[in-house]
Image: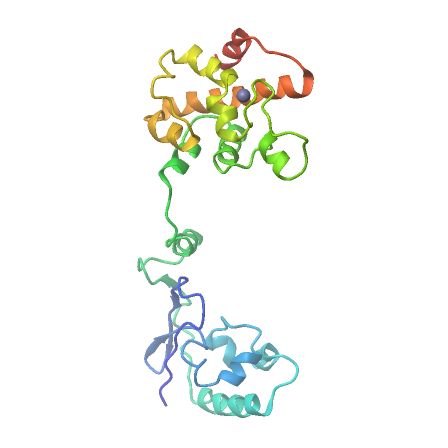
Length: 250
Ligand SMILES: [Zn+2]
């Protein structure tokens, strides 16, 4: 008898278990048996069950309470095949990451799970600063356009107007933090030439104005304080002087 195994789902999680079955390094029961026993597999409540567990007495309990006739037939055939399998219990149960050939760890699994995703450069800037975590989270939400600006609140029918409190334009994230005269006042206080080729959106800000860890930290602090200044005006009707903002930033 020859049993070959393959992963039945989640191909990105390509780890394997060292388990010698008939001189083959093998792993999950359903790796190559899905196609051979489709009816039985459809009843399985543990698609990742390994061969050793399948040989244990409780295997039948992992198949659901009632099997179809075809599944019962599959089960008999599989049990017949497994009856001739001898496990080597002295072989350590070690899992390996197939891509890096290193011992499996949580880090490996997460890395493999998200390997297909593209990491945006601006994201590294958002999180790569010495700012407190709450400021980084704020910047992340801002970059993802999830701040409760008037424009967003109006869009969700939570406000009667999308207009900015300081000017007549719609208050979206980029306007609030970068292009609004109130925001410009803060930026120009720290960077007098900010208006010349200044970024018009947050992605531009992270990519063109955050060339070092220190610059990213400073810009995060400025963005955070523009938001605090806006909230003071919106909720407490307090117009914060630029000197107060700069002292908070110092
Ligand atoms: Zn404005």
